[in-house]
Image 1 (cartoon, rainbow, N blue to C red):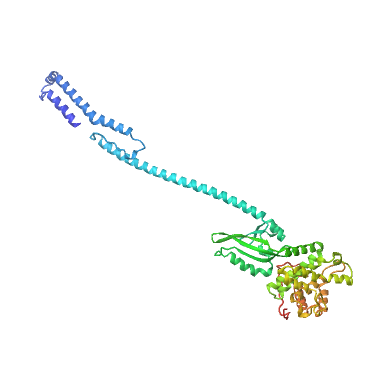
Image 2: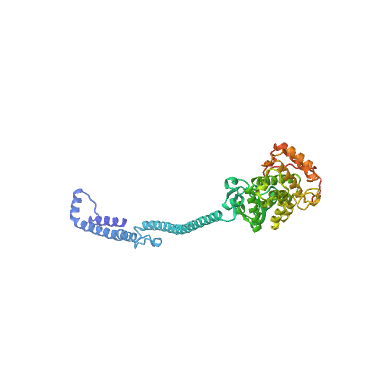
Length: 471
């Protein structure tokens, strides 16, 4: 551009012949004479300016515009502005190319982010689909478990981490006699387990709920229904874990009696339905025998057997005429002989069940007398099983202290006197002595309500009152 200005000055000076203007008038004349040449020079300069502008400014601008128009998002990253002449617009094109490179880099980053987001979105959709499927499967399994739990023919109880009852099914109610309202929140073993089996279940619990043990525990045992009758059941304890932490679980009780077992339980229930006094009498004898056995420091097995014997000792009366059992007044010789058959009948009923054979022997002997005058075998002294001798005393005591249609109940003191009177003849004197001492201590604490105790009542231990040889 500076070159153009220089040429224009040269042309002007040349038209003026480079002569100094001496006078203003001479200058005007000189201009008039050379104005043609001056015009020609100006035209030449303008043409040169136009040509220069077209080559170095207009053409590069048009190229710049056309290349910008061809720029698109697709293929943007490799696009650069390239001008045929970079003298006039070189700096601008370089700056613009730098800007294009930065924009291309940002677009590439955006594309990469878009691909990553699309991949992440696909993964999220797949995960969501899996969660929906998992939730549907969990709901299905929950419904199936609920249906199995409610409709199972086996007794099932659900409990929490502390073994407190959460829920039971109808089969549990049918088997044990308890409703959910009666047992909810109570320790399950307190409901169906005898006190003497606490150590047994504690060991089982420790084994089953040890986080290092994955196997479920299954075993057979005796549990007790609401009516106090023993139930031979197969038990399966299944813990529910979250990792290694046992959160809760459930117990399945499968009634495992044979046909003979079921027949015996049916007989007992029938007897109790027909004779409510016999039902209450059996329960009282069972509970009192249990507590007295604890006081005598008997083994857990013996205490459990005492409780069962107490419940079943009069099962043979199912074959005795109900009118005869409830007769007011003194029995005839023939009627008394009929009554005396019930130990043998009970023995025959219970001996059909393998698990009850030993219990049957005790029941057969529960009316034997210590001096040999009892029935049905006339056993004497140590020939009479030890547990039978205990039941004999408790059976007689409860009968004497209970109201009957044909007589009023004796007081405890009257019953104690009667026990002492026939001690050594009808009853084992050591057992009578220990029993009366036990009852007197308990009467002092319980205010004559010993017979109302439940299975988990605290029984006082009598130490030094009994010096005997078992069996």
